[in-house]
Image (cartoon, rainbow over all chains, first blue to last red; front, side):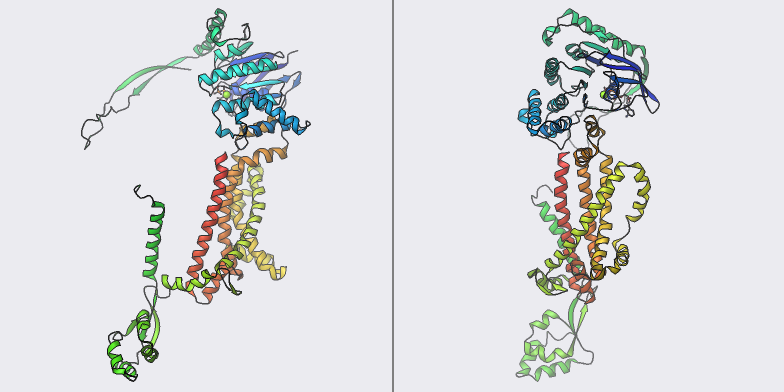
Length: 296
Length: 328
Ligand SMILES: Nc1ncnc2c1ncn2[C@@H]1O[C@H](COP(=O)(O)OP(=O)(O)OP(=O)(O)O)[C@@H](O)[C@H]1O
Ligand SMILES: [Mg+2]
């Protein structure tokens, strides 16, 4: 029996179908990455699994039990961090820990919070408010808060989407390492094929909406630990990347249309600063140009 | 304008000076007018009758030649001369608005109240800070009631669309009603409460007028709590109580404090009306009493005091509000 299972799940908002007939089955301990274009329902999918939204039809089951609402057994790392701005790093994590492990004594809970703050290397910043943290630090707090409640399954919604490439690489390694050592079941939502290949056991592309659904899954049989620099030259890595990328591009090509529109260039030229300042009219040009765009 | 480092000080001072000058120009002043029945000859006869009268008359003749003399001129005359001629003059007020006290009169007349701000000379004759203190005590009670009632109503409005549909129209109707209109109703409600009826009516008025900004801002704040914060609570399965105390209230606080600040301003408006109608000692009661006693200088003084106290209260609340705004 699958650990997490989605059966014919559909969801629409205000009559617009976002997801239709999504089927997914994940084994315990598996790390699955779902890649897809922006706005195609990735967050919707993860909210359905988290129980924050209810499917219109179909059902989500975790260990055979139908998911009817949110709960701490499915730890969600929100796309936009969702730290509470009036609580410090410590307090944000403690709020979660105190709630989920209410039966532990205070000292044990405190040690637990400290442990997870240390795990994401933020011990020096534990008394800071979220607004005093960089984007990457906030994301780490968010990951620590979710890991600290020790969920059965970890749901990561584009956890690194808003970060610069360098921070992103560092955090990929950190998250990869932590998930590996904790042996968790993970669903990672991402828009980066490289990130998915680096971290996941299996990649599932999300097709393009309306009515998006999951495409054919691609197993990633790359040896762990995966080394970012080494992977780039690995032929299997290259093959998988081309496969997934082409799959995604294929969804897009199927719906490509092209339109021609008239472009009017800004009617202004750089100013000549050497000219005398008085009564200098702006220099203007009038130029039009046709441009052909392909739109998704 | 950036050149002046003290813009924030100089420009307001210029503004105040302009207003003071306008006020002074419009206000009346005290002068002495020769009674119609008295002639120049009668005046000189009165002065010449004094010892060394002829010399005295020569000295003051120029100053007394007009039918009307300024108060300052009168005091500059030799006391003996003024005493002799005083009864021939009557005191009148002149100016664009003769009965409006001018700046100097207001200042001099108000000094005793400022010099001894805590003096208690009688029920309605006390130092200005003592009066202000009475008003502040009453306002803080009314304000506390306003907040205690207003915050929960605001939360209900923010959380329940049904509740909003039920009561929002009513709130919109009651909100613009002036304190002057509520007070008589308050007096009727507490008519049988004995000697304290006036106090209860005042508290009723202050609380009722002051709570609306808190109610409405709290409601807006609750509706504006980001869904993500609530989702954090839902994933953790927080109880309703924890959801309220750990997420809803902290997320709403900045809005609530905007409401608190506006409410305090309205409570302070209402106190003056309440004191005027109930005749309680306080900043507003003092104003009304001095109007009845025809001491118009004190009316202007009271207005200024009420304004300054209101400003200080508002500034204090802004400071607290800013602290909460800074966090989220
Ligand atoms: N609560 C909602 N009400 C109405 N429409 C919604 C709601 N949530 C999502 N949608 C719509 O569903 C579609 C998918 O949104 P979703 O947030 O799941 O996309 P996404 O794949 O997570 O995008 P991104 O990569 O930008 O995060 C969008 O067109 C969005 O407008
Ligand atoms: Mg999303």
